[in-house]
Structures are given as structure tokens and as C-alpha cells.
Image 1 (tube, rainbow, N blue to C red):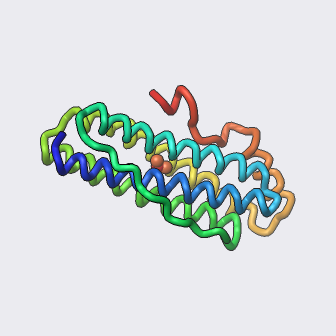
Image 2 (spheres, rainbow, N blue to C red):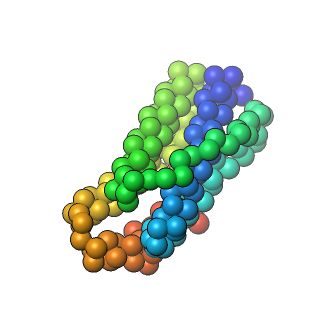
Length: 172
Ligand code: FEO
């Protein structure tokens, strides 16, 4: 496997692992603050990021590279508000998108079209994740200090279509 591409893929493995940890910390905070629907949503999102990481690990190994499993960094355990949580989540996703775009660029520079093709799944996934984070953040801003609105949003996050894609759709 091309060394530059392998390094970039391993860097992405680290970013997906750190996303999973970050969202797990957010989920735990939400659970501790009575936001059970939000917690469920974030636990799922954390699982999804782990799946993103695994998909990369398997790809690197299958293509004759060596996947590097990163150590864990401790994410924050306190967050100011729910708005703060989703603001951080959106910013984090924007950083991940930038990193994926860089990785795609490295593939093109190194003429690794197989990895380039593989990465298209991540490019689409980022579009969805950014849109989802923005939608939720907009709703939170709209709700403001309305406790009833917050209750409904938390319930929606538990039961409605506002869910990250996990399962067969995410594994396409
Ligand atoms: Fe795997 Fe949310 O990026």
C-alpha cells in the first residue's frame, strides 16, 4: 500500500476513534443530566463512529497495510449546555470533513484510485452528519430557554427520524 495513503488512513482511524470517545462523553453527560433521549442518540452516534473506524482498519489491513490502533485520549466530562454539546459536535464534524477531504486529495496525488473510491462513502456520510448536526443545533436555538420545547426535542431524539444512520444503511 502507498505509504502516504496508509499514513493518511491511519490518521483518519485516529480521528474516528476520537470522535467515538468524544460523543460517548457527551452521551454520558446527557444521561447524567436527565436528557435520556439525547443520551440515546449520542450513544448511537458514538457507536457509528466506532464503525467508521473499524471500516478503515479492515480496509487498511485487507489492502496489505498495517492499521494502527490508537490510544485513548480523555474527552471532557462536563459540558455547559445542550447547545454547547451540539455546537462542539458540529465543529468536530467539520474538522472530520476537512480531514477526509485531505485524505481524498492524497489518494488523487498518489493515484490510488481504489482508496479514492472507498473514501467516497465517507464523503457522503460527512454530508449527512453535518446536515444532521446543523438541524439539531437549529432546533435547540429555536427552543431557547423553553423547557417544554427541550422536553419535546429530547423525546424526538429518542424516538423520531432524527437518528444517525447505524446498521445496514451505514454499512453500504
Ligand atoms: Fe465518522 Fe462523524 O465522522
